[in-house]
Amino acid sequence: MTTEKPQKTTLKTIFNPITLVTAVILVIGLVLVAVVILFFGRSPAPGASALPEMTMIPAPTLTPKPPDPTRTPTPTPTSIFFLPEGVIGVGIYVQVTGTGGAGLRMRGEPGLTGPINFSAMDSEVFLVIDGPVETDGYTWWHLEAPYDQNRNGWSAADFLTPIKEEVD
Image (cartoon, rainbow, N blue to C red):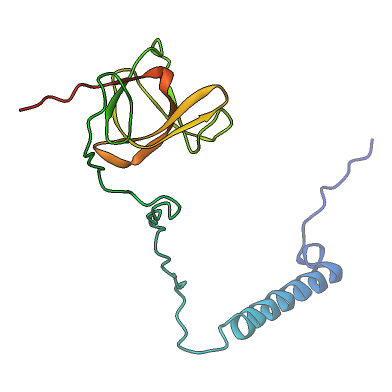
């Protein structure tokens, strides 16, 4: 029976030449990286602020839309004659009726192909400012809301009822 002697760990086995050369190369490499970071990693302009600069851009604002230059509001016409009761004419107030709750389309020009400006609801009151124009089988009147001159358009007379003027 042979007995093996346990091997002793010596400094020579720990510090073999390959380990020493590898350790020296690593240390030299770390020193070189530190030198590069210290000298070349700095800002070229001494005293330059390390804080980022911020540029303030003002928020957009709502630009008011200029009024439509094609239609100049006209003063309320005054008539020197009286129309018979129930007849629509310029200067007469009319009320929207008979739409069944669907509303009356107020168009930018007389006729069924005119662009729709808005819909007027039943019982709304308007002032007749122009007309009549006969087209597409209807008589068209240009109406304007008494409370807002921008709320105007052409509508068919079939859905308008003249309002009686009260005489004081």
